Every structure is written in C-alpha cells, then in structure tokens.
Image (tube, rainbow, N blue to C red):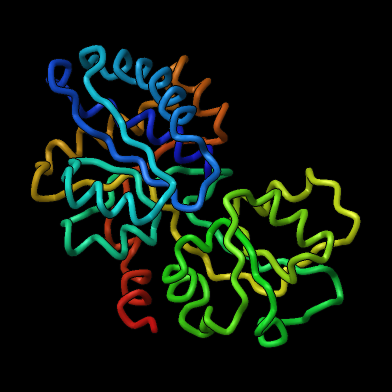
Length: 277
C-alpha cells in the first residue's frame, strides 16, 4: 500500500483553505511500511503543491506528519487531534469511536475499492492454515496483529498459534520464504500483484485468501469538521485524477480515482472488529 498512502497524503492539502500562516496538520499513518519519513514527506510536499493549485487553495496551506508505527500514529491522533488523516483500516476500526472518525474517500486501484489478503507458502509444502500452526509467518502487515486476527482471518485463527516474524519490506520477507527461512508470508493485494515481477527459485502459492476487505483512504474527525467541509474535501479529491497534472501523479502511483464513501461500507468490518477475539 505504499504508493496509495503517498498519493492520498498528497491530496489531503486541498482542505486547508486559510492555513498558510498556520498550516493544518495532515497525519499520515502507514503501519509496517518501509517508507522513510523524510523521503515520504518530500514526495508529499511536491505533490501537494499541485493539489493546492488544482483546488485553488493558498500555497503551503498545510503540513504533514508521517509515521510507519501504529503506536506513534495513535499518539499523534490523541495529542494533535488532526481534522483529516490517512489511516489503515485497522487503525480506523480501533480509533473510530474514541476520536469520532468517519471515512471520507477511498482509492480505486485497478477498478476496485477493496482488496484481499493472502498467505503464501512454497508449493506443496503446506495445504492450509491448520498445517501452518507453530510455523514462521512473516509480512509487513503483521504490524497490526489485531487487524489480521479480527478482520483478515475473521476471528477464525489466533495469531498466537504462529511464530510471527514481522517485516518492513515485503520483498525481503518473500525472499526469505523462497530460501526456506520462513514458512509463510502474508500479503495484501498490492504486494500480491507485485509477486509476478519477482524471480523466485521455488513456486509460491496461496493457502489462504481472505474475503474482500474495503480499502481505507482518508478519514475525518466528525466533531472538528462540518459535513460541508467533508463534502468539499471529498469532491476535491474526486476531481484530482481528472486534472492533467494530477492524473500524472495518480498514474505514477497506480491510483485510478478517489471515490467518496459512505460509512456503511465499513459496517461489516466494524462488526467483525467488535465481535473479534
């Protein structure tokens, strides 16, 4: 999800209409990612200038804070109370009630606003997750273990039954799987789609595929933003990829469009989270 997070981060500037003297903080949370904060903020800065022009907002009307640590994201939300943020679905589900979070937009990637997660193994080595118990399981998404247990595995498997090996690079985890240093790796949709471009000595196959899970994009604090602000913000993001310069950025990061979303889309996930172990 690295590319998705960076492009959404760039688009968030469009909200801060009067913020040049006191830029609005945009919090960007990418749990488990290998993105360097300095590089991420530099990339977002160049892209956000385009958004300010497209949305006719004042130059430098925002700043951003990027973190790849879930705990740091929680701290920033609690301390800074940002009006808008990019979060993972897991963070949204965990923090939505406490911080009055509501979804604003989703990215659309390859025509989809949802994704599936897969557990990959060497071909013919394991047939299902039951056989994988006590074995090593790697992946970047293991930064959010509650999300994996409650949402991806739908509460049917306890991650405590596996030997977890979190990684901040999917490629590194997959290389370890290829060498037999790991027994399995869990991938999100974007990581799985990139698998075909890697040269592996051993065929890798999925032994588990999740149900469709909605992509999370931008959330807002419903108590510090008005419905008009959220609507305007969403509309600005929807128009981003249609702009000639904005489309180049969207194409660069593999995002076809941004679509406004109703909170009801996430209700099945909320139910799983609430009822999860």
